[in-house]
Length: 266
Image 1 (tube, one colour):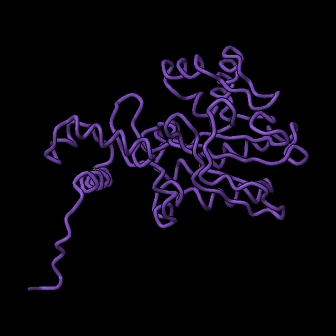
Image 2 (tube, helix red, strand yellow):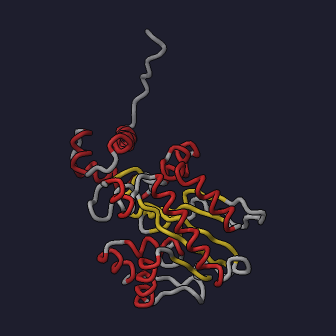
Image 3 (cartoon, rainbow, N blue to C red):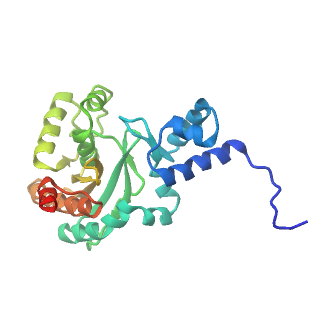
């Protein structure tokens, strides 16, 4: 008998869960019905497997289409995964440029399960990094990146978030829904967000949206630093640099502005 044959029994649920990850890696966004059909299992079984994977951050569900794709928790499991993602690979050189320009820490964040997750971090300044934000989860209303996502969510979803429990983390945390709505309208108009000691005392930050090829807000680029360096007066110019960096990353991901699209069409 060949010694290469593995006779160890497979755990069916684990095997199916891994098969789901492989299918999503191949297909991208996919619904429960199609996944169940490909796996030849009942739809309810596929749904339970997806719910478990979503709880662990291995998959994420689109708010509007209800379809699933691979989740960014995979980034935290292996640096090789992070290096292979188009987002972090495309963003890294731009983040390095932004860190050099501002002298502060730069992060790339995504929206996952109603929270902001930092998936990459760069600091090329001479200052010592006091906080490692990589993998850290934060609320939507307390961070500059979270406010970027809130500003661009569908109205119904945004109203649900603003109508929920808005925790106050510092005396500066904005928890009034009407105040937040006004801030979000400003963010959509000027193209960048800011927070002043709303997540932590002594910490200020700005962020700008990164668009995917389809125009949707895929992620946010954030510049954060201590208030004695990233002062209120510096927020607008640093915000403008964040917008420039976000635009560069978006173009690397295939996004074309309306003007650029007209030029290409012409």
